[in-house]
Image (tube, rainbow, N blue to C red):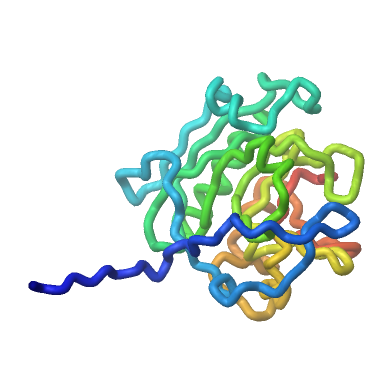
Length: 243
């Protein structure tokens, strides 16, 4: 009998991803822990939530937020933006698995065209995005595992360490590959397992650096970058001025 072998994709997602709750700090964030070796140079496959594009050309759609998308989003009536002021966008993007995928994002309708243009430029440059999807309220409230990496915009939540609304709650901010481009303030790292990416001189795919294509694309539509901030670093974060 011939033996068969199973080839494991070099981009396979670890089976434990998202399943290991972290001990909590007094500030309710997870305890910052060393980056698992499998994620020190993170290049994981994209989980296709939407049908992938049938072309290598950039493809996008834009329109009102569908009811089923709204139902699985974090929007509630108490959010600081009305549903009619949001728009649901899909864009094709390059993945770490060297395939094109379709991502989804909810943003403020006032910036919808600009957001599409930004992702058009990232697509042309084949800048890799691991996962691009709408975040649910349940995920916001879930116990942290510190290994998330979702590119997203609208999330109805306060700013980190504050009781004021985040710019994300208005759909006026976008986080790109958070694990590759973490948030750092004092001893707080978010995601909590992403410390391997604090060395910004050790450039790896998915990271954002000063004046690279990601920063340039967002600056072209007037958005600012959290990597330029002085009091903290939020390398994943882009927003309209003030956010």
